[in-house]
Amino acid sequence: MAPDSRNTAVAGVLHGATADDVARFADDPSLSAVVVPDGRPEAWLRGLAELVVGGRLVIPRTTLASVTRDEFTDWAHTALAHAPAAVAGPLVDDMAAVLTRVVDTTRTGRVMVRLFTEAPTRRCGFHVDTVPPQSTTIGAVRVYNGPTTEYVDGKDVLGMGEFYAHLARRERLSRRARSTAGAGEAGGPGEGALDELCSMDEKPSFLRPGAVVRRVPSDATVFFRHLDVRRHWSAHPVADVWIHRSPMHGPARLVLNVSPAPRVAASPGRG
Image (cartoon, rainbow, N blue to C red):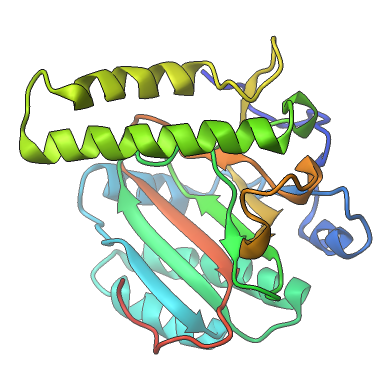
């Protein structure tokens, strides 16, 4: 199990901070992420977890391509109309607060929001989040229940060349595994690909010997740097990104991801 990162000093990641510390991104280019704990074990979070795990609150993968805080709040109230008010109200307020912090930090009026309830799979290995050219680069992720996001210490990364080699190989294996699973081919090449995926995820080749995979505290939102897509696959500094992944297994979770909105976007809608 990945260790909880609370009160742990990790290069490029600020832990145990208040929400006000998100503003430090502007002054510290070596900062890749700020972990902001809630610190309050609220009853509504326990109720939310029961609803999500029990399948009584289901949100299909949804992308709101470009929304203001108020537009998101209106959408969320509608999407959660059938959830108990004791859960839906605090949840909408909490998500809106995350959006507000991103908007205030990036000084933009609109963001892209992705929201879903889903059990973890091996679909998403270690990666970095990207944004369109010349976009602002700060976004956020919050996992409201279940296993949280895993990440690595920047000083444990051998280099971005090694990381992107790992990413390219994993993407190829993931496509092979999915194609075989979709075709229902028992014993086909995809089974070997899945075995290789598991091995890669267990011992990522881009990490130094002895490195550990860390886990975000269960009550925290992470505000983190995104990468201009033109620099993806290049030998940029490790400090420019937050290398992270979803857990590989566990119960259904509610996940909120907020990122800079594209400059030209379609109207908000399900994606």
